[in-house]
Length: 138
Image 1 (tube, rainbow, N blue to C red):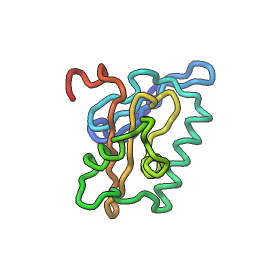
Image 2 (image 1 turned 90 degrees about the horizontal axis):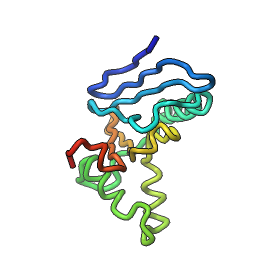
Image 3 (image 1 turned 60 degrees about the vertical axis):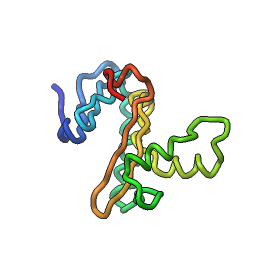
């Protein structure tokens, strides 16, 4: 029996059937299915990764977008400007890593996500790493 937490049109996680030490875990954000490449999670590792994020958020961690006047979406694009390139500086990497989110191993290695705090609210920005996940959309 599957258990869904959240709202798929905003953010949701669904835990499904077991297969030995693995369990089907599906994630959605803004109506997009994020775990479309690999939705089988090693439960112990996945649980710890989710717990780390929950602790971080409960402690009030998370920062506003790092560039004054830019929306979370624009900040995400700017953080990714040199990501993985040979000319990405260590400072750029460190800044980008500070906002990195949803690092859940194979289940989310097809998306790049950043988390920004806006007072009591959170904004998660996402970008699929592979063009075919976009369904023809940029």
